[in-house]
Image: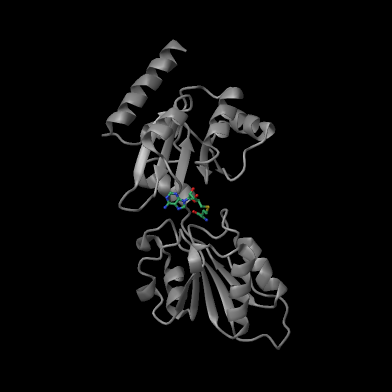
Amino acid sequence: MTTQNSRATGSVSAGSVTLVGGGPGAAELLTVAAVTALQRADVVLFDRLSPSDDLGSLAPGATLVDVGKRAGSHPVSQAGIEELMLEHALAGKRVVRLKGGDPYVFGRGSEEVLACHRNGIAVTVISGVTSAIAVPAAAGIPLTHRGISHAFTVISGHAPLTDNELEGLTLLGSTIVVLMGVGTLPTLSQGLLRHGMPARMPVAIIERGFSATQRTTVSTLATVLADAAAAGVRSPAVLVIGEVVRLAFSGDTAANDLVARAADFAVTA
Ligand code: SAH
């Protein structure tokens, strides 16, 4: 969990960088290590999806820099973020780079660690609660369940999957969790169907997990595009594709309907 700069130059400033996983948005899901790092920070560079509401009191001694949206509401580029991070650390500051979820799950955390290594800056990584697991859980969806799913695969929907990847996913039969997947939902759902995944495979889309406007849309692989469009589903959202979706929402009508339809399908298929 800890990566230290191995270049003992002797002339390295006392500054440091700590990559902190901020969890999926709820301050209660920050780790103790994350809270401690924030308390000690001189500078906090934070993202759009990191828990930022209460940052002033979590990091009382720090200058807070929103790198998700700054001047003119343009997000700072990855190179720009790394530059800022290094600049402050080289000036002797304790820099916290606060990221949503876990820094090593699609968070470009390792790029930032490498940038520190290249520049002789001591860097530490504090793991966070990833949205890949916690956002489905917030909607009552477990990723594994004995007898239903004994594996889960977390994929990025940033770019469409190849046919080989789609085939591999279909053959593996794991629960599929998709981050950044709203834009590529058409190619993913069509691709999985083309590779033989059952049309009635349950799909859940959980938007804005842990916020006051968290919303879950339950559907099936065949109908998810129409259902997502009808609901006006938007990013950020976590998608779950798999039988485990049926385990959620014991009191939810839409989910109960889905279970009934799926059970019907199992009998008639
Ligand atoms: N490192 C992060 C993921 C970064 S990618 C982690 O471990 O959670 C950003 C994607 O994460 C978003 O597009 C969305 O798919 C997902 N995400 C993060 N926080 C979320 C939240 N509170 N609700 C829904 N989706 C979320």
